Image 1 (cartoon, rainbow, N blue to C red):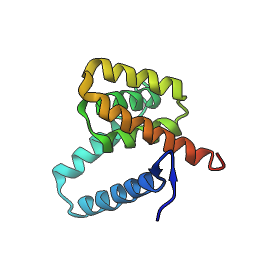
Image 2 (image 1 turned 180 degrees about the vertical axis):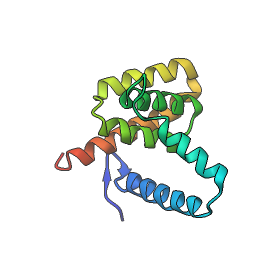
Image 3 (image 1 turned 120 degrees about the vertical axis):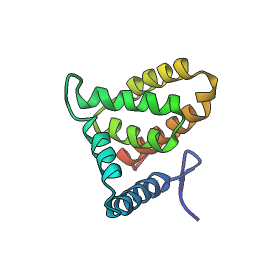
Image 4 (image 1 turned 45 degrees about the vertical axis):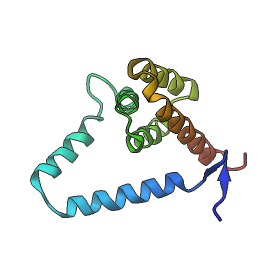
Length: 127
């Protein structure tokens, strides 16, 4: 039986990260030019430019919530936490997603808050 924190299996994010890495490798091994180009565009879109990477990750989080993609929400939250966003900043951004997307975003807001709790638990495992 797996350990739980806040009623959620602790390894949910680890499983997501492992799956994402494994499947991205598999997809790129197919060596399809169009897919490789899209993956490259996706990666470089978040590099510093007129907007810095931190701002772009927050935009990615909001867009992912409005588009209702939990995998994308997890990916952008992982990056947002690594880039130093506070819970207050992230919740404020999530509020924008909720306002733009409407009540259909609420289940994804729940998912995002759960993910944020898991990420913070990783930072402070003693709590």
